[in-house]
Image 1: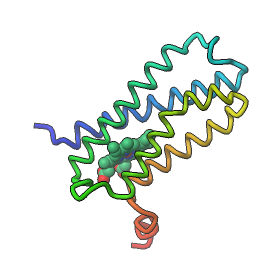
Image 2 (image 1 turned 180 degrees about the horizontal axis):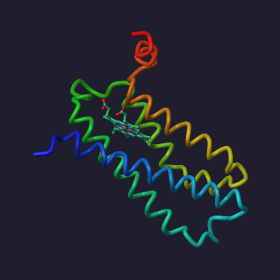
Image 3 (image 1 turned 90 degrees about the vertical axis):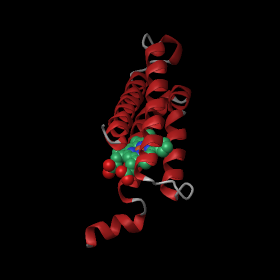
Length: 134
Ligand code: HEM
C-alpha cells in the first residue's frame, strides 16, 4: 500500500500549482485592462481556483496526518499556512476589486506561495537559519 505521504504530497502540489496558475491568469487579464464581468474565462477560473484550493487543503490535512505534525495541536507554521491559504483563497475577490494593482497582486501572491513552501520545509525562521549552518 502507498504510504499516506506519497498520496497527499502530489494532491497538495496539484492544488498549489493550479491555484497559483489561476491567480496568475486573473492578474494578467486585469493587467491587460480586463474587468471581472467581461472575463470569458471567469467561470472556469472561479471553479478551478475553488477546487484547487480544496485540493491544497485536503493534501495539507493528509500530510499533517502523515507526518504527525499536529498531534499536539497546530504548530505555528501550520497556523501560518492556514492564514496564507485564507489570503490566497480571497485572491480572486481582491484582484478583481483592485484590477489596477494587478502587477502588485501578482508578486504578493507569488511571495505568499514561497513563504508557505519555506514554512513547510523549515518550520521556523530558526530552522531556516540552522539548515544552512549545519
Ligand atoms: C497556498 C497555500 C500553501 C502552499 C503554497 C503550500 C506549500 C507547500 C509546499 C511547497 C510543501 C512541500 C515542502 C517540502 O516538502 O519541503 C508543503 C508541505 C506541507 N504542507 Fe503546505 N502549502 C499550503 C497550504 C497548506 C495548508 C493549508 C496546510 C495544512 C492544512 C498545509 C500543510 C502542509 C504539510 C503538513 C506539509 C508537509 C510538511 C513536511 O513534509 O514536513 N499546507 N506545502
